[in-house]
Amino acid sequence: MVTKKVILNVGVSLIIISSLSSIVLADAVPGTRIPLQLNEYELKTTMDILPIEWKPTHIRWILCDPSGKEIYFVENQLDSVKVKESGYEGTTHYTVWQITEDTGTMQIPAFAQAGEWTVKAMFYDSLLSIKLHKYTGVLYTIPVKQSSFLDNLNAPLYFILTLDFSPVLYYQHAYVINFPAIVLIILSFILIIVIIKTLLSVGGKK
Image (tube, rainbow, N blue to C red; front, side, top):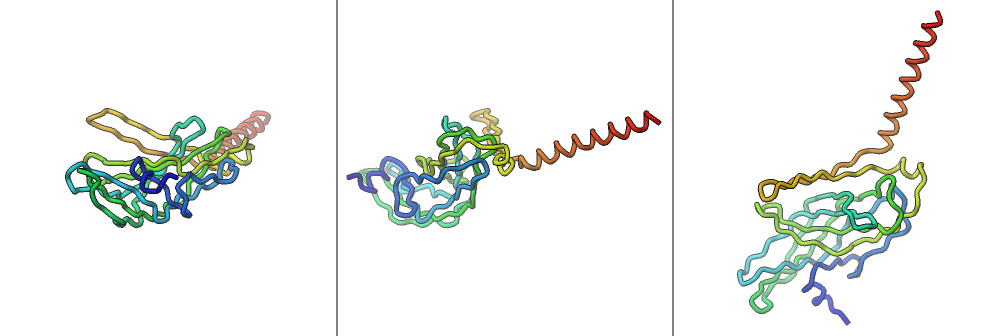
């Protein structure tokens, strides 16, 4: 039997509803909301020799499509971070943090590919010039079904802009576009064109 301590030694474990495995949500379609919540989640950080640990201050929730490609992310400052325990394992100093967080929700995007979408997370310290971070495994698995056009009208469009000029500059930002608003704008534009053409046609006949 694998104990919780062993799991923490090899990575980050998710503790939601007393479970260490990823949570499988019900079948979803574009627009379905995914809860971004942690309840007394335990994160273990380690530092060789020196008894100094970086403290996780922020979280990045990452949405991936069935191929594993990162489609969108949401970042937030953590609600609560407490030290549960700390000590040494040989010459390595460790700290186990207990984290509670409620970022809200994230939606499955419009025109989402059918298959198993996943959500993972990255904890990081935003106060250091070199961003220290640690990834989780898969937190949520979301089976996404084939969608209709009406499903897509209830969902956003996502894209990530990355500028990588390492080590001088690295910039990454996630953007969300309201797909229903785009459809409304396009339809309004088409309607205006039709009205203008109709008025010009009526004026030409006179």
